[in-house]
Picture 1 (spheres, rainbow, N blue to C red):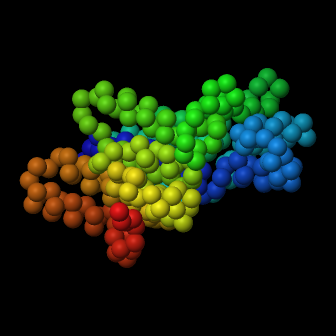
Picture 2 (picture 1 turned 45 degrees about the vertical axis):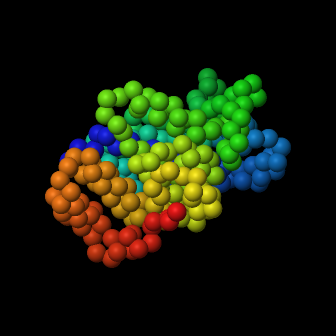
Picture 3 (picture 1 turned 90 degrees about the vertical axis):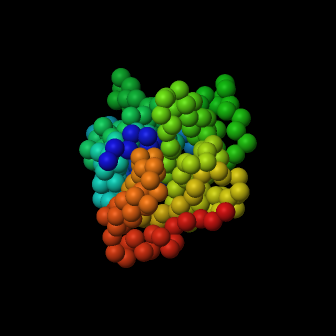
Length: 282
């Protein structure tokens, strides 16, 4: 069952991985105190570049950062869900306020890099001295994005989603977007989704609160998730639903096939919990 008409867009921190990658690296390398001292003095993205400078000056090598990134917590069911969605034919993309080096390192370690056609995040590279440099996605000092929603100055994910939507609109077949995220920055893209798209916020995280309070502003269907198991169930459930809705014109046959697929992807008590707790009403 091909799902080539489904575009899955995911945040990275606290969505794919179960932590904030910036905090994880800083904490694991013993630089939390300095980070907290500098935090009030500069934007987060600039602070992370500064922290890489400080760690490098103290003798931290790029290999040390890689070793920490390989230990980043990620649920096994999320790994499987991403691989399954890719195998079904979904176009997978990441929109994240982390950075290229952190994301690439973690994805490669878990065999997930090839699953994603596009990674939109803050640029980063290792310079000639072996120091990791991190830069903003939007150059907010010269060209602020001006978004009125709670987006960080270095990245408006809504602008990224609009660009993705523009590229999809040029295609012959209509595409359906599934968006998964957790943070304040994931609220703006949820407002850009259209009728027929799906917004999957992580329950009890900042974007979930905003979605619940502003449900009437969101055209997409909303379905919450809490952990790795629910991430997998929700993602595969909606991929199945979208694919069947588009490939079956006979309502009865589609309904029967959809029912069969739901049993396969969400067996037993997990399916029951999913169907009872995950929808966010208008």
